[in-house]
Image 1 (cartoon, rainbow, N blue to C red):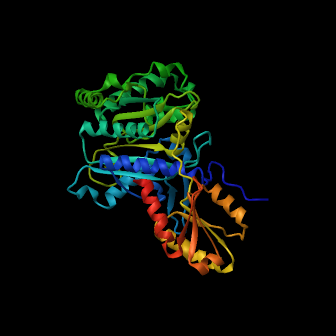
Image 2: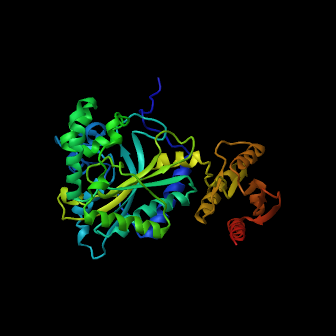
Image 3: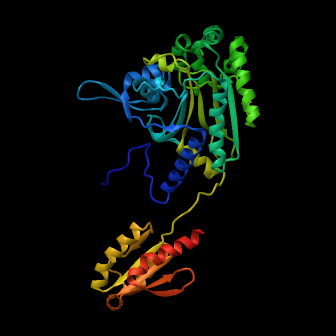
Length: 427
């Protein structure tokens, strides 16, 4: 019996992988415009990093991590998200010492979470994210949100909704925390076991519970916005003011909380409003995490970022019938007939490729007609045809496949001829 692919993973095959390449290229292009630099971190990290950085009350840490012990007895975890790893690298490599602040980074990489696979959600998935570390300026919060919206719109998405909330500073969160405990405690036994354990540890996480989202106490829970102190309210007003200046439409949702423990002040999500996208509409989530770097051993450093799943982005594009660019054709197909010609075709193919001409040839000893069919399937723009007789004369026949026009060219000029044709196409 054939070995099957692990549940919650996927093979991304030619014909599909080009979608990923297109999105990744667009993401890098947007990041370059906003002056964010790429960072690449290990796929596995010390388990402690995620306990301290993500939070031990989160579903990610409690239920979804792939954790193992190495031969030295060290506990390691396949990274479930990118922010903690970026923060760890920021501390380890003393990026806080750079004169260019804030430090603006982006990443694209594999993440791993043990959760129930469903449409657009996998156990191994690719996440794109950005992190801006070292600034308390609310304008960078707005910049981060605008970058995400800019990326989605540049990829053709129109049905987007930005939802934003403030979680406040430490003082505001503490006041809200006490109010939540008083609100839920009398009837906490009606909630799931996770919510019961979170009541004292992190009651804000109760609002993010998927099992009890319809419980009547959820809709009447105290709003964080009612507990924002003056500084927190002023900060939030600045952020939404900058969004308005940038023309980014938004909705304020006082019940929006993020699933990770390190968030303060700004929290946001971007959702798809397309019909048929699915019940889970969130495309992207992020926020400000002013205590994360300090928690993992670095200096007190403010930060903000977001992360999105490439898989869900592709699903959203497909739901809106966004067309991906197609570039399935090749420049040239070499057709050689006869043993001497076949041997010579190897060198000609190499020379064409060295000149930047996307080229292919037959490797299965097919007849002339079958080789032309192969050239058609590959949508070759030109074919170079020659046999042993043509070699003796020092010529090849070059056919423009779209027009059928055929030209006899000296063998030594074949590469230059096709290169010139390509240049004419571009001009």
